[in-house]
Amino acid sequence: MGNLPSDYLGLENIKEYYRNDSRYVLSETQLKRSIRSFNFLREFSKNKVIYGINTGFGPMAQYRIAEDDLRELQYNLIRSHANGTGGFLSPEATKIIMICRLNTLALGFSGTSPRVLETLANYIEQGICPLIPQHGGVGASGDLVQLAHLALGLIGEGKAYFNDKMMPVSQALVLANLKPAELELRDGLSLINGTSCMSGLATINLIHTSTLLHYSVLASSVMNELTASYTDSFSEELNGAKLHPGQQYVAKKMRGFLADGSVLKNRKDHLFNEKYIDGQEFFSEKVQEYYSLRCVPQIIGPIYDTFLNAKKIVEEEINSANDNPIVCADTENVYHGGNFHGDYISFEMDKLKIGVTKLSMLMERQINYLLNDRLNNKFPAFLNMGKLGFNFGLQGMQFTAVSTTAENQSLSTSVYVHSIPNNGDNQDIVSMGTNSALMAERVINNTFEVLAVQLVAIAQAIDIAQSYDRLSSASKSLYDFVRGEIGVIKADKPNYEGLARLKTKLLQSKAGV
Image (cartoon, rainbow, N blue to C red; front, top):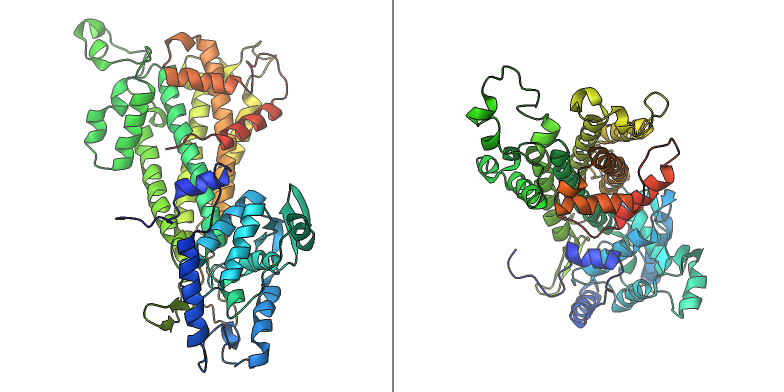
């Protein structure tokens, strides 16, 4: 991408803001750009008809608005569109959405007044997060409904999270010693007209997908140790014969995870050794493992490549002007078009969702391998460490993993292609970008639950095989990580709280690809 500007907002920055490892600050460069854009627009808009300043909105843009009503017009737009439904986004997600909105407005292509930007920056700094409902936006003209709720909070109305409590925004402003924003020119439109809700959610989805990818590759590596598999399935030679970088990356990660273990087999010592095979007509050990064990680079590789592409697209979106019209002080003109359209985000979230669903399917198959004694020929049924028939091992956990994976499969229908014309057919084809991001979020959240079950199964198998001392350092660390939340399972007892703790620990992990 060449030399990036100093205020470029990358996924690593978002990760730090999301985890409160650093704070977002509106820079002098951003403020100067915005002031220049606002001052230009204020002069340029005199004696001209410009959408969003002195016209109605959407299909009512044909109506010219009287001079005396221009300021109130911006408030009307926010209040009329703040009508979302469903559960509210978390304050952590809302914070990232606010940062994404501030970042794009501060590019200087929206003509937003500097006072509005400073107010938004103060809300972020003080932790005032207006309530944003999940349902409402169709993703063309951007996230109009969700961002209207954000804007409603900025003008001092509605409710917000503040100091871990939900309260009226007016009360939060008093406690934080802040004043609401006062709208000018086209501030109302610039606040709600864009893709910052879907983009903010997309960045969080990418953060969590990175964690899932890390643990899935690690878990798959341990699976190969548990089965004493051959090393060639993730060898550099085999995977180098295929040109996909994701496949090669996953294979390399597996080799790194397994480098210092002493369990894996080399074909030179076994099936390629004449002395070893001499006289054998039937081999009790498998010549090749099941696909869920030996095709890991080929299965996770394309998901990793999809993740990288989504990261690139999402970063481009959050650093783009996704407003309409676009104010260009350099060319001294205002351009009307559709930069608010969320197709880029919607498409990538659909692809990411499908990839993560496949990841959960791989996890489920690996769980089944460990729990099905007729497949592995190594472990007791359901990894039962009690009395067979009387105790049930991880049988109940498997139901949860299968059910959750099935839900992921059901959720993996594309949202990107489900456009419904609306807004008097003005918005005749839309992106449904926030819906796509929210459904991807649900699939990702589900997959952490499947992962938690898999990791418990892996730890149980290690205990049964008594192989801890022969495992790689990475495998031992994973075992210790799991056992910190759920102990060895011998007697039958509920473990749902331990699974929940493990899932939370995984979500909070800073590990990633």
